[in-house]
Length: 109
Image (tube, rainbow, N blue to C red; front, side):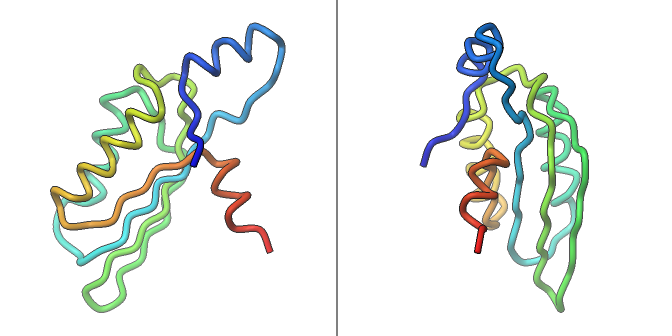
């Protein structure tokens, strides 16, 4: 699966191509204290702005979708996505970060 990296964005921007620089982060797993705090602080550490958050807790299961602006990120998006996946493994959660365009393509009817 292709993921956008910031150097690619810089090259495309110089060529006058407008790219969507938003990403979707999904989190699924057993509810515990600090999930939202961990994900949002990891975003903040990399200058990624949280635009919208929706979360739900069903019995003891936590589900969250977060829309973020990755245009100011200080690391390539692929690296950030890998960091999110690693944080998920550490917390025994499933955390995925993907570019909004890829997310939309995967979820079209």
